[in-house]
Image (cartoon, rainbow, N blue to C red; front, top):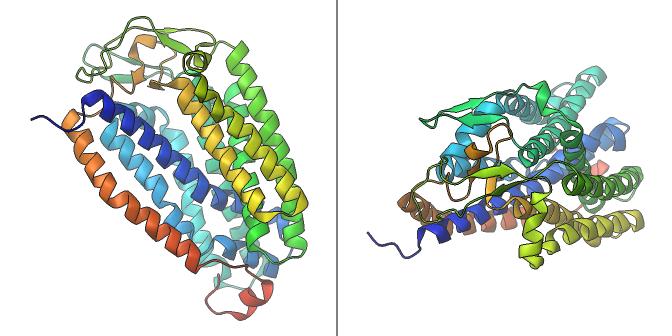
Length: 382
């Protein structure tokens, strides 16, 4: 059966859609995590903390849809990637899921009792639910950039040969801290828009400035690691982009600095890191000066640029192997079948606009500042 789109085109489309889902997750649930990470530090009493919590209270559940969509898309479009990454990062994924479970429980149970210790405990649980996923996601991306210690045998069975502690190297920790700084900046920008003028907003602005500077510095240090460290992989032979998926196809070698090769081949890609830096700078200046929309726009642009930098630098690689580069997974040797990708694209064309429309409507309905008076007198607030 001839399909309207050829196999290589569908693979590239789904590689791009994966980026869209990851960026959507960072832009929506990202500020939820940033706000949670800031909660114990920007709010000093129960009224202030309830105000901070309720800036994300109406939308956090809907924002998690992007996380679920991302995991489902990896499973359906890149089954090899799903199998290797979810098994290799099992303990890391468990830590993420455990911390994310704290978030709904914290929201629902925090105000069930008036005790100070009870509420403070759940406040710190919410902090863990924001900080830990941000850190682990960044560390995971750092590991992907430097290569995952896995190999495939002749039957394409995956064997992960790393350890949990082995996930933490100087580069991956920088990536993790960059992820935290990026999302804390995003959360601080959100709080400047959603909280009343007062001490909480002022504290959020101060933390936002620190996070913005940290984002710029850590992004630059990470770029230096890639440029001057032993990071990068390249194909030694041409890859048949239309062939059936088989991770044994093609020969990959470790090549220091190879992640920069795409910028020489496709100069337009330099726009991604430029947006990462300029967005963080705009957000930092906007937060410092109390300019709410430029601050939030800047933090969003920065997240877009930083995430796009990773994807564009590595293309066509999705999951390179550090111990057996020939086992590396790319957009062209690890995807689902031609028909599967096409059917999934049709479903996405139908349902993604619905998700976007519902999300936009929900934010429109819930728009406006949250005040301490509202949360202390309203029965519908957390």
